[in-house]
Image 1 (tube, rainbow, N blue to C red):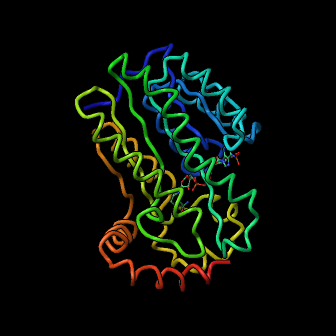
Image 2 (tube, rainbow, N blue to C red):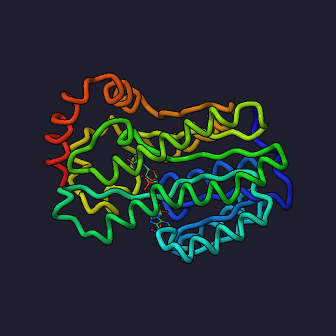
Length: 266
Ligand SMILES: NC(=O)c1ccc[n+]([C@@H]2O[C@H](COP(=O)([O-])OP(=O)(O)OC[C@H]3O[C@@H](n4cnc5c(N)ncnc54)[C@H](OP(=O)(O)O)[C@@H]3O)[C@@H](O)[C@H]2O)c1
């Protein structure tokens, strides 16, 4: 299996392209010759990235400043994408919250579910039929090692990423032999604006330096994984250990351990 050949009319869509893993995915896809549709809320960042990608790689880069947790704004984008030739979809935008659910801001928790789960589903539903008609396409879903097991004090994020992980791996199986691929990207700690967005500045100190991987490494492995038609990409040794630990440690043990760990995240 390989990625569809880039053509002038075709587009690769990257959500969460204004920073971190999404910006690196956009760079990697532009390097492979894909023209892009870059999605996030911060228009200035998208504009700057689009200009850079066009200059460096000679591709077209359109920007869509959309709050993907807003159902109406998202529906408009989905309608547009359903009508266009989308050959790659990187469902990557997301954020986390930490702390007790009972004390959380309900609106922010709902936004998290909308962005991390419902938007991923909606964008996939919008673009998959066109890919199937053309018998060519690749979908990447950025889940997380956090979605492999219960996450006390990180409950909404763990649940939303469990959805993303399961959707990606289920679709991978369903799409076998169709010419369309779906790959799960399930990272552990990646140095991005994630901790800042989650408002947990001490995450950096809790996770030792060598366990972090760069957004560039994650994106390079994700794109190589898509090109190879892989079911799942888990970048870095620590994320692989987290994955085995999360999936095979009895839940009666892993839940209380993570409760202690996540209580320290502030
Ligand atoms: N970093 C990690 O340790 C880690 C580990 C596992 C999984 N992940 C996952 O990786 C993905 C990318 O995160 P990152 O680490 O690259 O973090 P990041 O640097 O904070 O990037 C998050 C991206 O999502 C966009 N975004 C946030 N809310 C949005 C909204 N309502 N509508 C549209 N776009 C929105 C942000 O752009 P705007 O603010 O401009 O909208 C930004 O481009 C996320 O799904 C995250 O859960 C990260």
